[in-house]
Image 1 (tube, helix red, strand yellow):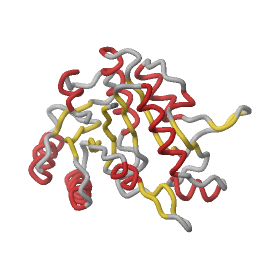
Image 2 (cartoon, one colour; image 1 turned 60 degrees about the vertical axis):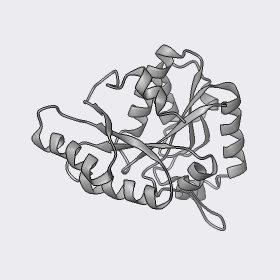
Image 3 (cartoon, rainbow, N blue to C red; image 1 turned 45 degrees about the vertical axis):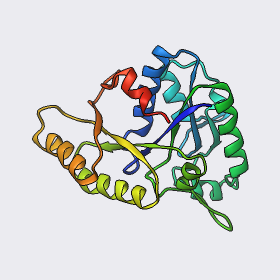
Image 4 (cartoon, one colour; image 1 turned 135 degrees about the vertical axis):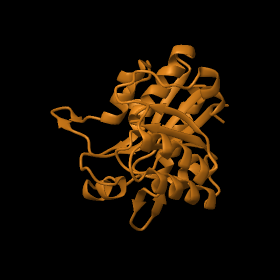
Length: 227
């Protein structure tokens, strides 16, 4: 049975993909060939003569060095830079959750550790037409625990607090917080770390500085976050 963790964020562009790549890199260095990445739907991707390029999956693959086939790392990819539900509507390719669960479960049969990345924040919809599906439905259906990725800068106390509050209300377990774009010695960033822990009751698991090529979480600690 695979062990999994879901990477959510306090919003768009907080660094979920970058953090996922660093997490996968640490796992891959210790569990080569036994870990995989998955994202149900990704939007805002460039297009070439061969089709749409799944940039988040490609970024994670390049950062981590995993040997997983790129085509196995996602189910749906969209060109429009919208929330997946709107990109899917615009491109006439709605998310079919049967495919999502089938693709995810297939990975669980092949790999021991699965890192799943969401899109946007915890409330981001996957589908919103005659069928209404959010990432929280996927998280609950597969009983996934989560890591919250937050930007270390201004506003993060509120964003992180609201994300953690909503997850607790929905019965979704958060294993902790990772602060991205953290600056050691920055008075606000260091205070934000303390305040996020106080407001959420969650531990800040690690702090990532701009340009870091490694995550400051030990392999043993990281492995324990996967349930």
